[in-house]
Image (cartoon, rainbow over all chains, first blue to last red; front, side, top):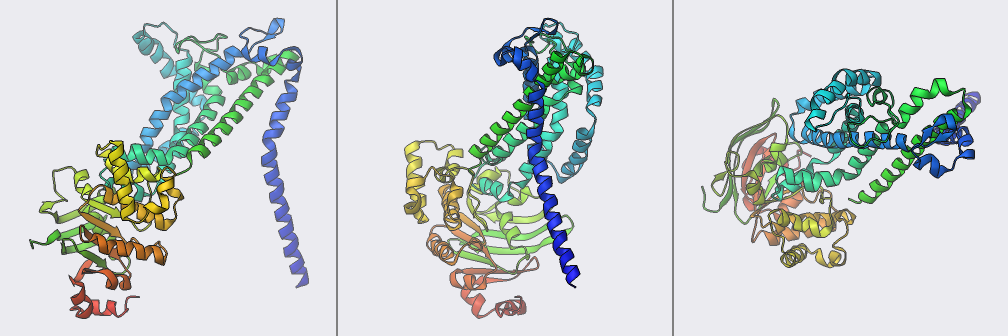
Length: 298
Length: 253
């Protein structure tokens, strides 16, 4: 009896300890990652100022010039346009599914979203090369009087938006579903139309969640590598319009990592690119949290 | 139709999927009286209430047959805009659900969407309706705070005020006191007794004592059917049906 008691207490202690180890691992992980990247890129800092690294567009590794502006702008363009495409689609799709459609659609949309979310990004890349790139060069660009091979910021953004839609949509559907129906009833019974109810009540109630879901999508889009680098053109230039080729940060790392490791400064530069991605995603996250708190008063 | 009848329901059947929720409902609700729909949980009271302003439109797989006449207009088959019908009826639900905006706009919401934007007129009406529900003194200095910061009892009174603000003729109340403390409940009940001078009130409850306290007219439902209806005095003192007698004696609890 005493042995059993002893055992139970020990087991309890061990399992508690395990949980602490697990949680501290999770909490420490970002710090370990961030520190690792920082030390690995310190070689670059020793010879270049941070301002030069971030705001110079001269990228000449052979003479030791590492300006990341082109890559940062490539990432910003692709991400921004991808969000511009996917955010309205996701919000309207989520509203349509939760507010207007029959239950049946909700049932079929979940497997569809799961399939889309589960596809490997290289599949999206191939789809981009076969469908999106030619479509841009033969249909969209001529509409605007532009000439392009199709490998462009726009191609990257379209592929990217299709990739993040399932993630954002999934969260948004849950958010709209958890708004109590009584709130809709209250608004309708005050003489509001369905659209007024959505505009003034549901969207407002859901705002913190919408911000969170878009922030999540944005962070994903910013770091997505494979599919984007397959269609975005990868030319070291600051894109002037969406039909120009660009070179986002993740593509820079993926394209050069293997072969450039022999050059210490180049390796350090790629680590710095990773550090930029890391910091940007973290800052986004913090901003989103602040916005959510700001709008979460209802 | 009786001259004093405000709402008349005829042969109303409602199915959700294959479930028969409301079975051949025939009732008449008198004008400017407080009518209580009484019955044990799950008997279809709330569904019947929501049919009246067509909130049942929101539910999936619903099939409705029959008619509900409000001022001789069949709300179930009317060609006029359903938002107009709903404006005739204020709704008070079981728990208060303030709109995601500040206290002022909760009351002004219905007025604003129907196009009234004159600031002074709005101010006056908001004050008037908050006073009507005895909430003004508690909130006049924080009208621009989120309504969700109020206590549950205050929120329920706010919900009543926002319903009254759009000038309804009918108040539909679905167990409006079930989430409230005794004092807040009493405030709502007393308010209803005042309001029935101007409004036709239909209130759903499963609390027998509450029905005895305030009802003018009672509709007793059980398992989706109306068992008995009539003036409160008659209903409580001389129930005609066996089931009613059993319920009044507490057999269902």
